[in-house]
Image (cartoon, rainbow, N blue to C red; front, side, top):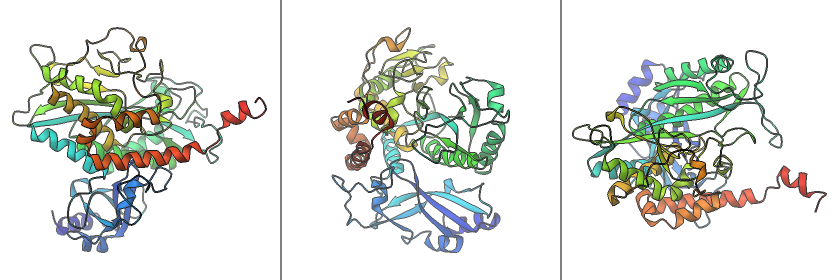
Length: 449
């Protein structure tokens, strides 16, 4: 599609400005905001430039040049708007559009450390085998009172009842309706931005909600999750409330996950490769699960990418701690939901809501791909609680990074240069985190040691 397509689309909607977005390592939107005329002049050429090092920014906004393949002397890359992602920005007063961009070097090669490219890379590996993955994310988040001072714990907001929830009300209809004004804005914003969201329900924590996305193409779903997070934050702010996708925002409440349902189709026939004989799963399904079991510990850094992520991955907290699988067993990290044979799939329950959707989906599919290519066999499905088994997932970000570093196969699938850049970002974040003196340390060490 050419500049003519963008020009006509913007003219039909009287668009004044366009936000050109690119997700960084954390999934934070970076890029430029341009008047439409200037944007149109940049379509089809390399004039819309940003520094390559935006992809080595930490979540704190600092650069991670040390031990990174990108140095402070690195040059520019340019943004290529993806017309399939062109949407309105529903919360702006002036007509504004947003478009997700691919990043390219000035020699037109794709930027291999850009998260959106990493997902494309994994999808191409599937396509080379004649396979097409299908995913469906389920994303949880909390609504909280505005928290201006980070030293204070987060609190649930006051709903339409005039009271704040003190405990969670899982699947509570009235509890969900207490935040109906925010939810209505979320749905309205999603409709205006053409996001294909399904249902919203109340989760187990106070003011914790979950949104389900309809199954579809992994890149499209990653784009939707990326934009949906913006929408939820803006809808909440309109009501003077924060929305957070932190994995564990409350000390004694359940964390927020991004459960990922995944299956694989045959490109030529559209047949679900996970369907076996009768109602049983196929060998490809079992190999896919075997890959998730073997490589998920190494891939956890992409599914639980922050120091806070590991506060969620603890026993008896509606979160996984190992890599067992089970049939319709929600304590199992890898769950095969009950379904008709054509819809057999595996649900990866390891990812947190704080994960970059591009990297999380890429990593989860990469594990399954390796299993299918290596014809791995999973363990037998468990019965009963998965918490009876040993904690085999990483216990913190350092542990996760070590496991990733020693997984040559996963690094090759994700891209060695990308993994090097990702690890440099995470190490810099760890350096910054270790400097912080916590309230726990002040509480128990100040006068007792």
